[in-house]
Amino acid sequence: MDMKNRDVKIVIKGAGEMATGIAHRLYMSNFKKILMTEIEKPISVRRLVAFSEAVYEKVWTVEGVSAELIRDLKELEGIWDRERIGVIVDPKWSVVGLLRPYIVIDAIMAKRNLGTKKDEAPIVVGVGPGFNAPVDCHAVVESNRGHDLGRVIYEGSAEPHTGIPGPVMGLTKERVLRSCKAGIIKHVKSLGDEVKKGDVVMYIDDTPVIADIDGVLRGQIREIYVTENEKIGDIDPRNKREYCFTISEKARAIGGGVLEAIMHFLQ
Image (cartoon, rainbow, N blue to C red; front, side):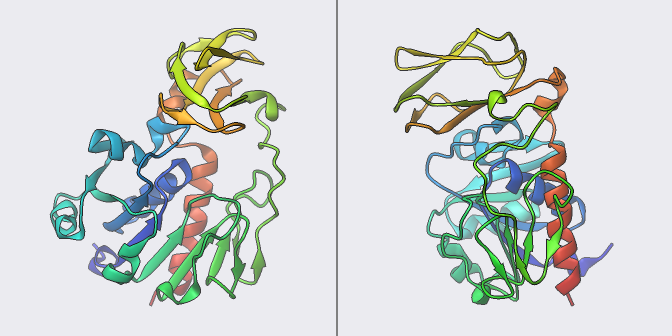
């Protein structure tokens, strides 16, 4: 057992699907002191595999690893003693200055840098577009599907955001459900349900959201208010219900890249 890794404090900005894949990989690699930050009302689409659900449910478990919501840093050591990942509502990341972690990972997946700086910790890793290593972080991890997914970039940036979802069985935009207007989501189908092209999956107020393809409803936002053109659902054409409940290959690859970057710099 490497006690050194267990004692390294890590803050991950974001607790959505990709951030969860990172946190899970680090936790299983014996990094046990992890704190994730979130907004007050997280909008994770693949919420069954997102530790952001702890904000709503207090505790959320993904593939055997549990995360627990804390109200302030005084609760964090207790969470860590119970071998859980901490989640805190902190959209301004004030915990970074208070906790003084050794590692900061920006996994918000905002497609741009919202303010992460290289001096926030001895090791700072940015995930996806908007980060430039070694200018505003020590390393960048590629998040775009394809040959370079998960690659660690020590000089330069990730591929720019294209606005086109990565292909699954050749399908891109067709598999993603987006809000045609602002309003309140009302579910018709449940996560894991099989859907057919033309099915009503959910409503935004009284406006139906229609499936463009056949598949399994792998992702679906909570019944909350959304703005126009927001990603609100994900239909998986591979038709494997079990994929709804496990970390995706993309999140695992990104998690592996982050782990590589950490081990590259960790002394």
